[in-house]
Length: 118
Image (tube, rainbow, N blue to C red; front, side, top):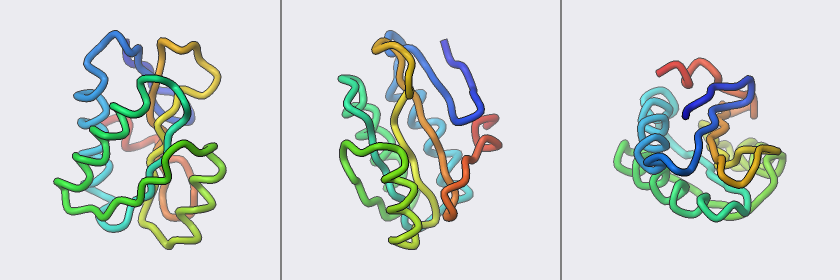
């Protein structure tokens, strides 16, 4: 199940999460080519999802800075400080462990919900 929300997209981790994440990362890279910052929360599925997102962004010509496990506000501060074109946070926020998702940000740290309709 894939559910768009105000702050990103959520999906259950029983699906092919790498393909889902890669599809949204490719749409993101289509607009925000350049330096991209990525982070994730500590969910078990986060590492594989982040790896798929990083590969897709890199394949699309982006230069990715992987922050590893960080809180979402740290990612938004880092992308502004590093003058990145955008950021991707792998997280499902407060949702249960069987969920994960993506939050996409522009260079100012604002959410990019229009990319989620891709």
